[in-house]
Image (tube, rainbow over all chains, first blue to last red):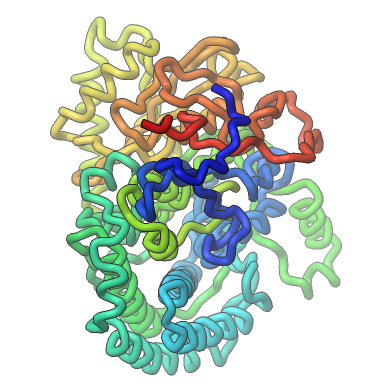
Length: 398
Length: 193
């Protein structure tokens, strides 16, 4: 076990090559060590932890509200899904059922978030493969979604939009007209990308049969989300374990069959179309009414009342200085995130801080399967595969 | 009381059927000895297993049972039981299992003491590999039979286990250099033939 043996031996058929952790094609701080023979990867090993920020430890030190900002930094491509999933977890432990309007607003936000997550993944994947045009076509719409999110909560990337028991703000007046326009125009952009790529010989040659993950391996490695669906595993928590009002909207679950990069591209494209359909139904069904649940344990008082009424001011300070009192209990709440099953396992022993908060991140499972996916492929294929599984380092290392 | 799940969703029914199955199949007579059945805030079953052997037996049984058909490891983690609320042992290893066909969830809990090892389940689900490494890294719980039990988030030279309650949040251990070049469980490339 002599680790210090120099690897400069040029005639060695087993050369080690290091991909990452700081390389533009590695999408964050991911490191893969490959043993190559010629240009074929014979063995690969991933190393993680470069972006470990002790988020789970911080959950035990911060109050429930204070930790909300850390959920943004898990999967920063779809921060809203993280916010909402976390709020949902705490609400489940407290036994709070949020208002109807809040529910539908959260669904809108989660679907928008899923769209930008897929946009980032696809655009970056396509860019890695050398197609610049599609990148601009897709990122224009990501910009549009970010502008909408900014109008709703004042922030673009790290949103911190959800609150336990409600949302920080109701959506602004011009949000729904804007969303309608988006729902009409965005599928056209998808059609354009579709026309450019789906039948494109170069793209097909570059992606078909690359980074194959079989259905059995997807189950064994615990992979979920678009990657598992591309492998033919028909699972989507929005349909299978419906939360909020997902059983009241109609959508199809896109399932692939080959489990390669091309199928993952197709699944993501179809999912964005389905998300647009869900958004359209949400616009129709969005009810009026309060966004905050009437529960004095969690409801953040109106600013006007805080400034004019003594009791409300005290209550406001109690919520933010001491935190909310969550009863003892535990739950493992999962939602369908952009990358797959995003879960929060919360153990509460009472009081304003969590006893244990575990984040089940889909990226961790995918990166583990990635070692297996790239074996037998070329080095350039490893980059194409990495783009298609959309591993977010913030969620991977937590 | 309420939760985020849609009312009357079909999986809720299957979850209830499975819960009643648990009572008469897994907690009957002598079987229940050492096991404990609880329900969490979402009414999902939480089973405290008797010991390491019982854990593997239960997982194998759940895989066969047509009321749940557990085939998927959703997450594997642990928590510190320093305040002894959940029994006398120091740590609790938590297995969140899921089924891709019936969509039923079940949680298994195994209490282990400091220095005591939990059994590996990497032979059942390869997904457990990194998850068990993470638990070892964060809590210092060893897994018997794990193929490659190294630290995963922290540097290999790191001391202590950060998610233990006594570990101070601001205690840091910087390293000026990187760990040597290696390939996971096999530190060196295969020798030249």
